[in-house]
Amino acid sequence: MQICSVYVSVQTDDLPFVKASRYDHITDAELLELYSRDHNQEWVGILLERYTMLLLGVCMKYLKDENEAKDCVQQIFLKVLTEAGKYHIEYFKSWLYMVAKNHCLMRLRDKGARHVKELTENHPDTETASTQDLIASDQTYDLLEEALNELNEEQKQCVILFYLKKRSYARISEQTGFSSMQVKSYIQNGKRNLKIILDRKMKQREKK
Image 1: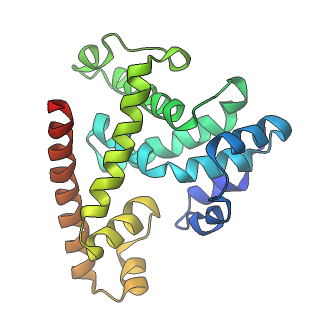
Image 2: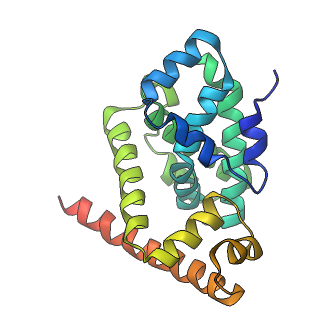
């Protein structure tokens, strides 16, 4: 099966978020319907672009390593693009969360991680995920969006360019006008503050 150009571009330094914005008015369900009609992988590619942040957040949560998380995001993109047609997907965001979670757990199993048993207890199959898990995945994504929006503008801009659009320090410096040292500082501080904000929001949610 030929992989659509969207995936190819994801592997480079230029994620096509601008192109995807043309389809912001189309819902996930409508994109899935378009895909079911013509099996054009571009529709799935657009959906994946919408939830790159979700994928990165899930992979970081389980793998605790930036480079490994980025590698997993690429693998999940390929997996979804090549296998989405095998499933009847009703809620793409929730389904994608479970695919990412399964992929990370399998990677941990392969590495012989000692905490896999704890992570996989009562772990549902991708297609039979419980309502609670699906709700939790939506909430996790919402928390990521909220936390990102609480960063100051410089940190938010650099974090998005570095982690989501895969820009190098030099490219970010060129694009934003920040010095290389400023870019590095904004990324490091942004990542640290993002974790602090997420931890706080997760604790607040658990108390509700």
